[in-house]
Each structure stands twice: as structure tokens, then as C-alpha cells.
Length: 175
Image: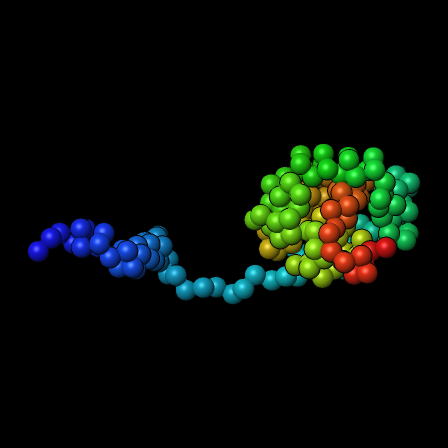
């Protein structure tokens, strides 16, 4: 009779099962926690209607682009080549591309190129602005609320995101 290690090495399926059991037991036992799943994360943004209204109310010191966005709900930088280039630089500096990928096709975060939005509101400029400003309960940072991006910079990042759309043009909901 050989050792149990050599027996397992001859049976790959048994080795895999042993590894899964070992890891499951380790994870379940870490700091006395159980492996029982908790509630599913909420897809509701961590913001109130009052917070959103306050941010979207035009202010005297808003840039012309921000003022236009707040009045119309449409991003004036959409399809603006300079704003898209600035948005790409801002997206890289703010770590957008670290989670969503250099081409925004998705990594840790979802794809932003196919129109299948994790948060349906992102199909509108107002909704995407809300997501970038306030973040999400699913792990996206509140770039605007934290002061990492100005409102004008958020509009430029949005222009970059929209420029990467590769879905069916008839499905565009933000024009």
C-alpha cells in the first residue's frame, strides 16, 4: 500500500475533491466565520433622491458643459474627440480601466461596451452620471462624491465610455 499522497496523485478527480474540501473547510473556519452566504448585494445606489436633486441642480459656478447637462440631461461632450481623449486619460487615472478593462470590455467590473447595463439607469446620461458621482453598492466608488472627479470630468469620462459602445446602434438610449 502506498502513501495517501501518491494514491491521490494517481487519481486527479480525488485530488480535486480533496482540494475543494480542504479549501472549503479553511474558508469556513477563518476567524470562526461560517461559509453561509449572506444577502445578495443591493443594486440600488447608495444615494437619495434629495442628494441626486441637489447635485443636478444648476449652480452659478458650473462650467457651461455641466450647466447644459444639468438643464437637458444630455452630455454635451458626447462625440467630442477632445473630451473623449480627456475622458480616457481620466478613466485611466481614476482606475476605471483597472476594473472595466482598457477597452471597457470588463474585468472585475462589467463590460461598458455592449449596452447590457448592470444598472439599467446607465442607459441614460443622467443615470450614468449618478453612478459615477455616487458609486454603487456593488463596489463602484463614488468618484464625484469623494472629490476624485469634478462634475465636468465625470462628463468627459462618460463621453469616453459612450465612445466605446459596440452594441447595435438602434439600441442607443442616451442620444
